[in-house]
View 1 (cartoon, rainbow over the protein chains, first blue to last red):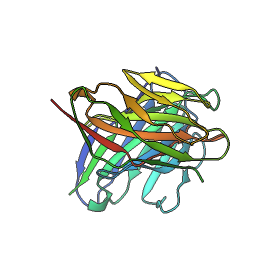
View 2: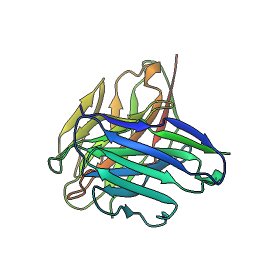
View 3: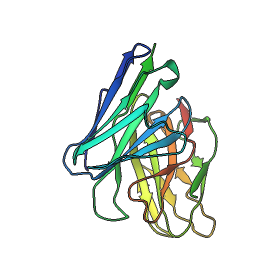
View 4: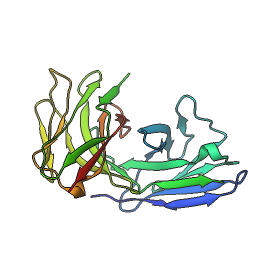
Length: 117
Length: 113
């Protein structure tokens, strides 16, 4: 199957700094990628839809100025957590689908565990 | 809007026991249904899927049947192993949703030797 690679797999940063997470589709082009956040022992919540060449679409309650999304190419989307705080500590996962219609499968990255200290 | 409800965990079973994790959904039209598995410290992996009513998805001994009349997609396995210990997520993708998924809350399965 298609591969989505997410980097880094874990990161520890100081409060107030920014962290960039990359999501790459390795063997296919993805015009749309999705960013999810998972709190401990909870489900995945969609944060935003990343659209190649245009602005991301954010879900209600997600601060677009805090979670900056850039989808500059068909194989790369980045999520930057700006001015991180301890409450931003979470597991972030991206997904992308192989274009081809409603029945295409979504492939997930390995996830990034962010810890803000 | 779309929603997915699955049984809360944790579910603790002995090795070789029968597993059922219930999942029901609310959606308009004809969604596709999925089960994902998340092993400790890893991302999600697709376990199985079904794209239309009465389809049965199966993989690694796990099965789930798309029941439109009961809006359910229960996950079953006849004999679980310790290596099946993980968190299982039921998800749906609605019509015209691209690859955006709506997830259930996840069910943690713990299998003891």
